Amino acid sequence: MNEVISSVWGMDPKLAAIMIMVVSYLVIFTEKVNRAIVALLGAAAMIISGILTQKTALAGVDFNTLALLIGMMIIVAVCEKSGMFQYVAIWSAKKVNANPRGLLIALAFVTAIFSGFLDNVTTVLLIAPVTFQITRKLKVNPYPYLVLEIFSSNIGGTATLIGDPPNILIGSALDLTFMDFVTVLSPIVLIAMLVLVGVFDLIWGRQLITTDAEKELVMDMNEKDAIIDRSLLYKSLFVLFLVIGGFIFAKELFLDNGTIALTGAAVLLFLYTLGAKGEEKDDKVREIFNMVDWTTIFFFAGLFIIVFGLEQTGVLSLLGQKFIDVTNGSMNKLVFLILWSSAVLSSIVDNIPFVATMIPMLKSIEAEMGGREAMMPVWWALSLGACFGGNGTLIGASANVVVAGMASREGHPINFIKFLLWSIPTMLVSVGIATVFMYFEFLR
Image 1 (cartoon, rainbow, N blue to C red):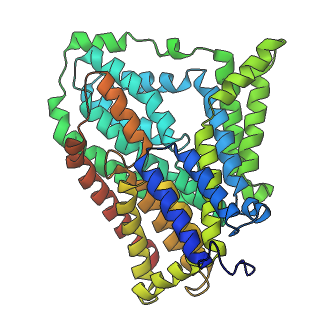
Image 2: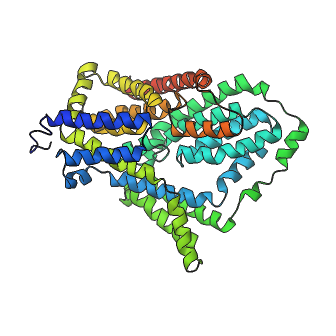
Image 3: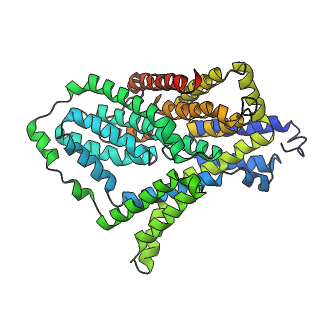
């Protein structure tokens, strides 16, 4: 704790830190001001107030997380230019012989798998346009496809370290590997996906009817036409293979995930610009860097500093103690409290600031709860709740909002209230599955 601070603006430093955090989070949740700006202003307030110095503020920034995010964003941006993702979507549609019912299942699992390796927004931006194209040819309602793709992106992203920002935060904070997430969370994700797809097929499957002539239109689509640059496709697959391999064997290689991602990004950029001359080479690099979501990067940086201010003043330790008091020190109660509170809150507010705040708070109680190993069920509960909770409402995750916007432009608006009829049961069932799994896997 920062002992040199006796008061801030004439008040207790804990109170000042809480005020800065509350005001920042409230403005972020209103979406009236760009969230990166708010986070940076909140970080500046932590320094200007004297709660943190510039040196301690920088110490609070998790550069491994930022490196992982930037590296993967660059890799995805280059891969996208090859057309590989659209290829897989069209190929999947043809593999089920353009059957609307089979297509519903195929696109759901393609979305879930992509979301395990890409961020959810990128996944739906790639899959949704292909969905509109195929459903238009089949003359079927795209609504169930889009809604299921929203749910699949949030559930699928839960399975891996890089699939969803909350997992990136948790993995970096605890030095967890790619395989740690896959081993523990992928069974839960698979069960949730099977139940979700089964229910959607049961409810919508028989309503999705088309003709043989319309199926033929889809079967006539050539997935190879989606490949814009075959050479870049091979380069992208090569680097992706190396990066995923690096994630899997990170401990054996003694490398952090951020280093692996940035190295992969640098190699792929080198291969992408290889052969280009003069200004063209610089233009290609600038184009890819422009595709990096710098808003998210600076949002994370500011958020880390705000949360570190709370940690340094001892606020998060006090909150952690409250959690122990509420649960009477019971690990089972703490796991279920974190799982369900994370899910409910993440369906209402952005799960990134929520998880960023919870991480140091939970770290502060590890010793009293038996150490890191004993606390691992709680950390997995935080991941599952935060990621699955994104399905709770139309504003629960960025991917939800993006698909809704695209659907509206295509003339198939997704109504907020109508969406709740699907989203709340989906969230409740998926978190219920996680609850049962967590109990039998860790707590009984």
